Image (cartoon, rainbow, N blue to C red; front, side, top):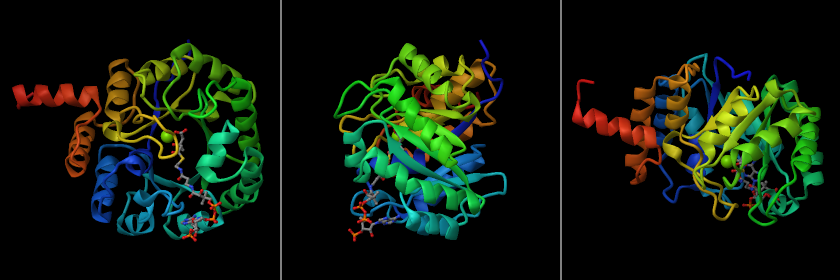
Length: 306
Ligand code: HMG
Ligand code: MG
């Protein structure tokens, strides 16, 4: 076992979380959420996306959200971009990173970004080159890494090929997305094994949705293989608007609880993170999906001094 002593959490709630919530929040609430997450010690936050407003109305005001933020220098903000226009917006917004997103199956690729896998790679090649040239960190997502809502099972080889191609374009980090949250721990292990033959494990991040309650177990299985970067979403917000049945992302509070109680550092203040989760759930008018947050809030109510 080579479990890392410290894990970097990439907080995707403001993007992957809010993009799938029915309520479109005002700009100032989104900005306040990002500030609270940063204040809780999350140093890597996906703040939004620059995509079609018709397709994802929840992200239409990412530019205005960024304009309100004054992140401390150690906080790395990024956004999802599908094209050159997105890159220009990201640069104008002062972001430090961008993420391009491809899919392991043809049907999901078409549904999500309107083109084939090969076409997406051809689009991303000059985009990633330009982003790297502009000094940005570039992440590449592989969606449907453990299953597709349209095509079912996905072969690890297909994911590994795409991960290798994205890394070859210049993506410094490859996030393996279980978009619909169907994978189980040994599948997650096999996936990292397969991808790890083509992409160094130090470059691999894992992105689990918790539809079937497998996300924490999957994360731990991949940490045991040396993965040190984990995506999570405050309060378990989220899903994917183009993945029918996709549940929320794994809750950041649950990931932090699991890691810190296992002696693995995250740099995150769990109490402050829980407060950020309460803030956003109140604004959305919904319950947190984080088990750890619910348990710790119940304990706070029983014993306010604890
Ligand atoms: P297209 O129709 O091929 O391209 O869409 P287009 O150039 O004709 O643009 C369509 C419309 O989008 C136009 O507006 C453009 O102006 C606008 P209209 O003329 O119809 O009013 N547009 C943009 N607006 C703002 N910023 C931009 C931009 N580019 C075009 N950068 C496109 C192609 C990719 C743009 C479209 O299909 C799209 O936006 N898709 C949405 C994809 C998306 O955001 N999906 C959810 C995120 S992925 C995910 O959640 C999975 C992940 O979490 C990992 C996992 O869980 O596995 C990452
Ligand atoms: Mg996702």
